[in-house]
Amino acid sequence: SFGQEAKNTHFSTGAILGTTPRTSFESMDQLLYSYQGYTCGIFNVTILTQQRRSYYDIRVKQTAITSPNSSCIDMFLKLSMGKEITTLYNNTCQI
Image (cartoon, rainbow, N blue to C red; front, side, top):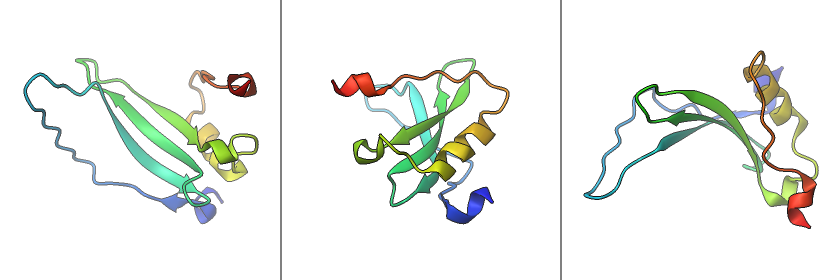
């Protein structure tokens, strides 16, 4: 099952964002699940515009980039089912 290996790190549903003069927030990243000592994580990213759109993001530490945790990938695919997935990284980024 997906939840057995994941460290579920759900936070409260409410969030308060404050700014100081001349600063602003463009997005809010919320860690939903982490795997293997935070080497792989799934985030919900909310873009703070009038439309307030959000998407899921999978993030992997460089030490795990060649073989990310399979449960982490499976959970990301489950959460992203039916949605377009954009790949921003591949192994040529390290060359």
